Length: 162
Image 1 (cartoon, helix red, strand yellow):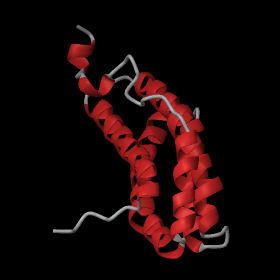
Image 2 (tube, rainbow, N blue to C red; image 1 turned 180 degrees about the horizontal axis):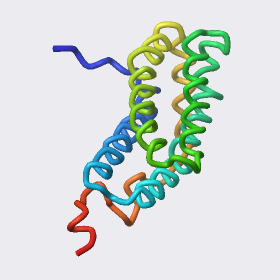
Image 3 (cartoon, rainbow, N blue to C red; image 1 turned 90 degrees about the horizontal axis):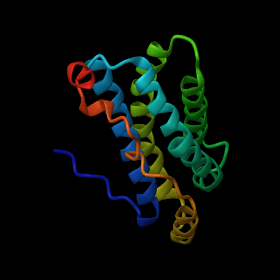
Image 4 (cartoon, rainbow, N blue to C red; image 1 turned 135 degrees about the vertical axis):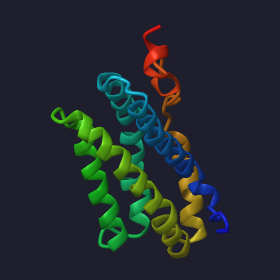
């Protein structure tokens, strides 16, 4: 069995954000499995993107990726994936397909950042650089991603119409 990754204290808030992102993927899967209307799932993903992912991406791009440098191949990959995800969240055509792609690609992106990029960051950045992130991360305040009135991921189609 794999040992859990030892995460630097300064990166733990970002890992918590990633956990919420993985829960978003699960919620999309649960909604689709329970045949929840696409519009209900999309309303939540729009909220999640605006309130959670946009500030998270901004923080990573301005603070985290800078520690490795724009030319680092892992940073290039992460930025490319951010652009791709932003496109998927903003698409207004083939929304059902976009939700499916978001679920798959966001999951893969988070796992890449947690397992590969953050591991590299912990190796390459100094303790002082990582400690400096602690104060900056606390400045980013986002609403609770579960503070959403339509908990479609908990309901089947039958119970939603009851």
